[in-house]
Length: 334
Length: 266
Image 1 (tube, one colour):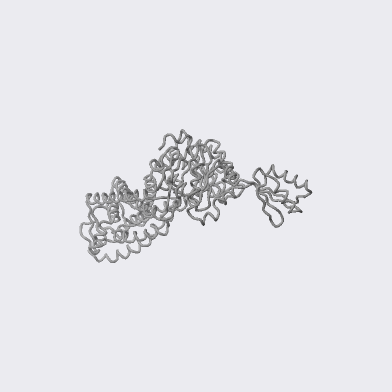
Image 2 (image 1 turned 45 degrees about the vertical axis):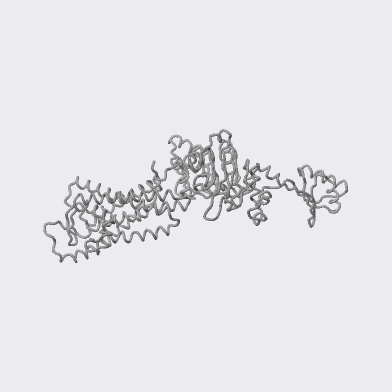
């Protein structure tokens, strides 16, 4: 246990974590840290090692190699203290079908030995936070998928944990419900709970996280803020359709903000080295000056999808160990 | 604090089953046995009990065995449905899970034992014959003590098996494998005196035999004859049987603790 870690505001500290099942390395040497109060995401495709990493941190899997501290407690030496300071929302629904919402929370509070007065009060608070007041005495088998998830988030918060772990919190939910879940997660975070979440939804990581680690094949490929990650790909793209493509080409290549041009069957794609929203009017103006009328235009900012595919794309998978190794080195800088 | 896991499960089926055993097997067999053994001259001066009374103690024991061995199955379901993760990730000590399962199972066996006793008496089993009211109360307490310790042993075993397995089918197989020898190499339905020596040796260390001896001691008495065989039991014999059951329970608890410490639930 590192006494300093709390003072410096780091709540999760992982060094050289390695976890294998038989011969397969599910987590292949990852190091990262999570700041107190932030929302930190593991973004990666299925089977990337996200759940294994989270299961080690929440002490369900015994740590094999490396070190990990959660809320100042060593996962290896002091798992009991770790368990006391965290809340967990598991990947699949883990609610007893035959217990009511209140009973689920009650049971959880008892598991953690909460005093009964505090327990009652907390149940009321949480049921209203996740808007399940009306379902208080309804058995969980009668709840919708979104309600179940909300109840589980409520349960995870029951003991006022320092860190809330969310393993794929919105998997299988419809878009509306996902948005609502994000609101709840944000609200919880605003109350000061650090959130560690895993997801393979890029928009989710983008929308929620303060910082994201993209993880694939058990390794962290890159870490950064959503904005920062998107900016590593840099440029906005503009797609234009005009009556005079060669003329457009000449006009655009004359502009300093345009880095590269690519012709498509009916239009032209310009990669910019600046903010597309500001450059686009300039382009249209310049074209108008030469009498070229723009018939269609599309501005595309790099999305988390682009970042994700860029870092976990096929070429990376086929190249094997070499490239991820350099990528891990990159995360060291941060 | 010990949690009772899911106490809503209906007991009805597990109550009806031993009742049916009593009703059909008991009445049919006791009719046969009574006819076959009517030729055997009774040992003079020893009170005689009919087969139904003799067997009823065995049915209580058998029901306790089955209920206890299947008692751990909820762990397996909780594991497969992911509910176990909540508990394993909580600060709750592992031995509380084992005790919770065991105590809930034990409660179930108590209820069953009482119901079978009542049903057996209703069918005509001569339980507590010649006992005073106080003796009867002590006897019932004694039966429950035996049933309780015995069921704890097998519930610990069941929990140990369940937590180590992945599928309910596997548990079913193992339990069937266990119940056959335990049940038939015991004195639950018939005397062991006519067994070949190997089978006698097995039944001598069989916890079920000791449970049945205990129940018979408390329901019938320390000196009786049934199906032509003279049974006597001293309080020392019964204390020995009891200690053996306690030892069995302690061993099984150690086994369960070891299996739980190895278990990972994800």
